[in-house]
Length: 369
Image (cartoon, rainbow, N blue to C red; front, side, top):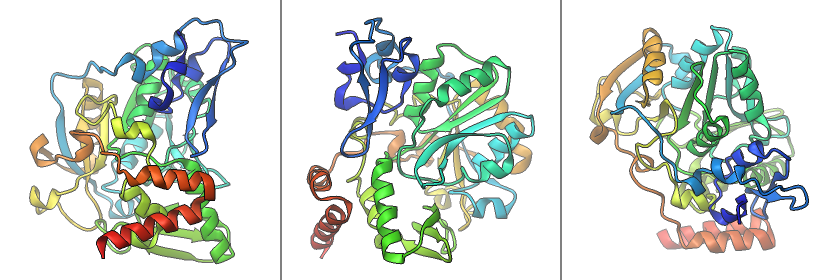
């Protein structure tokens, strides 16, 4: 069998196979958990095997990175930017650099219905809607074609996504572009967009108002406090992670895509030229850099990444660090699959989000009582 059907439950959802198919025989369809997997129209398929050549899982992922990775703690010099960011404002500094060169930025944001989609933006106002962590897998749809078109037109392109999305784009393009900077996120796994959407609907029913926006890393109570801000039509609400069923399920790793438990990228073999995330534990390394407005960790993985990173330094406070001083689980090992996740998903498929979440949270509370 020479088609992507071999990947089965190991699929990352990167969409490279659907993009590369010359006969458009592959489309991404959601399973009952809300995760998208490739489905093949056997009548159109010509069995060319291209889909298997771009699949990060089937091919095994190996990135020809620089001889060494360098590590930096960074924070934007503008505190207002850090307050609107998940950590230290690294994404804003990067995207500002590209947008000021008339470049294009691709990243994850909410659409008008509060579904997560990867978006193409060309202004800072549009970019601002891409800030912040989302904790669910975005829909890439046909966006890789747009990236390719921008590159063919010699536009400067910044693409930011989970490691699997970055690897999928990289494999689809099948060549290096000097004008493309790939940035992957330090990722603890992703829930399905459908699960997040179900959660939003539950909140809307309780509040009687539509949700207009959601920030999972609200800093009104400090960077280290895992809180989320829900913006409704007429008011906003700040919730601790423990008061949010979706947030708790995510932090307990119960709601992740199956492939997240065998992640190919939980190491320093990164698909991006740069890797960005939170610099947890920075207070133990650079006490004078630590504050409650957030600090980013930046891994410089390639010469191209280093060249761009050097351009950002005037807008940043930064300190070089080392692997042992910034070690995080996604940079060293995969997330173990909790046995409770099987029960959660079975219940979700049979009885829906509200019942499954309540049952899972009750068991968590019972375990800790």
